[in-house]
Every structure is written in C-alpha cells, then in structure tokens.
Length: 244
Image (cartoon, rainbow, N blue to C red; front, side):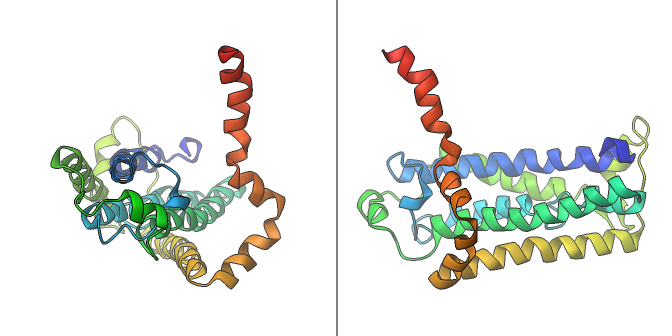
C-alpha cells in the first residue's frame, strides 16, 4: 500500500484497530471469565441477555473490524482505486473480498457467543449471580470502544476533512482519492461486509442453508475445524518431547 503512494490510509487503520482489536480481546476475556475459563465458542450461545454491556462493546469492535466507515480501512481501497493500474486494482478487489469474509467470521463469532438458544454448557457454568464483569475488567473495554469511534473520526474523507492525513502530510505526502471514489469504495465495502454478515447470520438461523454453505468445502472445513492441526503439531514437537 505504501507503493501506491498512500502512506496515510495505510497507517490510519492501525490507529482505529489498535482500539478495536484490543476491545475484542478484552471482551473475549470477559466472556471467558464468565464461563469458568472456557474458550471454545462452540460451547457458548445465548449469553447476550446476561452480558448485555459486553455484547454492545464487542459489536462496536466487530463493526470496526469489518469495513464499515468510519471505523474501517476503506481509505486504502479508495486510494488504490484512485491510483489505478493492475496492482492497485488487485489491492482494491482483494480488499473488498476480504471485507466479505471479515463480515462472515466476525459476525459468526457474535452470533455463536451472544445469540440463539443458551447452550447446556452455558446454563451450567454461567451462574445467575455472576452478572457482568467487575468494573475493573469492564472499564478498559468501554474506554477502547470510545477510542475506536473517536479515532475513526480523524479521517472522515468524502472531501470533508482528513485530520490524520493532514497531520502526516509534511512527513509522508499522500495521494487523495476524489469524493466519488471515496463514496463508491465505501458503498461497495459496506455491501461486501454487510453481505457476509447477513449471509452467516441467516445461515445459523437456517440449518439447511448452513449445511449447503459448508458442504462444498469438504476436507478444508475439517482442517479448519481442527485449527489446521496446529495444537496437535505443537503438542507433538513442543510439549511431548519436553514432558518425556
């Protein structure tokens, strides 16, 4: 992306995502804490009614993770569209495909953890008197949510203002996409990310649709389910020799 002549759009997403990603990690920590340290989302479900504040904060992080303006990286894509050429178009198209798949996996996490029928494991381990996380755990998540939203407003684009880009301009001059290019990229990115999110949400409400989506992937789905066998590999080459 630096090769496109767009250092400011490239450096801007880490600013917003520094907050958003940390928010999601700490939010996940609250969920894990509530479920006696369980980390497998397949054992979860229906936690939203017991963890409403955590659910709200994690939705902010999820929206920031998907390319929804202003909490997004669509400035990179608009710069690629402005630059033109084969490489830039590949960046633009690849980013939009990434937005689609990000919509799928990020929304899937929220759907499995906070919605649907509460799992048997959650009913057993999420005690009625537990409630939300203590404020010592929750206030950093809330602060990061504010940071994710506020930092996103540093680069509104669309010809309104780009405070972040102007701040970097003296050290790293950058190309500026036109307002129509900004609007087009943002609209297409919203459609891509939103389509992925809607698709996976509907799939988990419709078992037949979910089966139809997963069936063609066959062995790849099995490998993904086994986390690419990384845990087994680590156990064999790392833990087992040391424990022997």
